[in-house]
Image (tube, rainbow, N blue to C red):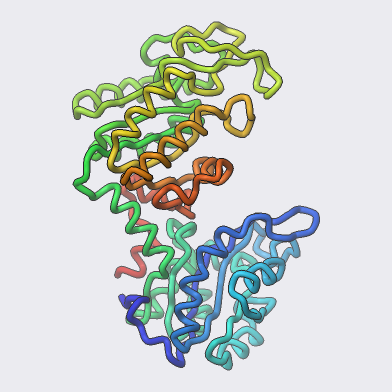
Length: 397
């Protein structure tokens, strides 16, 4: 494996797998959030400034293995050009004769964008034939798409076989790996993990893996009610996964056995319907009557969680504390986000990952006050679970 920081790109065509799966306005097809494009700029510029040329490949949305205008990467060219500060060429098929002709003659300092990889079924199937064709576009392969690193697709994993010596990570993936490893492999204490979101079922593997590493584990969001019910609490109409009550009981036992301080909310903001216009009240979290549901953590829980966060040296946050999309129920998530930011200001290292957590720090304008905001929701979750990510393993092999 080569290192992007020391590699000589002079006269080389760098084929870069980026994650430009960005949101588009349904009417105008204009990019509404260019965070992922911005994140890829340092890697692209490194190649260009080093005397190389760049061929970009990505997917966008979920097309049905055929061209669809709303999923065309042509829609995002102007936003890429805006962020790069230069023109970007485009080909309407990633493995057409025209594409190979353009990439083979691409001059140093120029950028070419290939059409959506998922317009071909071979991409998601991990087709070796498609990977071999894509490999013709470059002299060196760079994977900088952390958001798809957990997929064994043609462009993320299989393609690396055709660059046995000339393959590397881009700056974005490097930073993602370093940030997660800094949390999971550091000896700094205390390490606090904040895990929220709606369902225990989607976070079991993460929680189980974290129990061997963290000092404090904060549980929030809808998943907290399964833990409350596991302790015989009254949760009214709150979200509970009945099939996972025994799992929650086991997690509570394991945390105690491993000396992990597991914190569950002690009070809740409840509502009589799932609506921002609902009537609300604040009660003990294990005393919710039927007809009411918990939609945010209460003020005592906020203070309890904040104290633990403020005393931490390493912080991992994945998942909101409540239904923060509704103004009435966003206080818990906002206060926890602020606590993570303040702890970071004081010297803690903080990693925020998972779509809703990232959306929260962005909404509350706190993204620049945490150490790292992950661009890869599913990939980060699987990495936290201890799984091997195909896109990472392919470069390291």
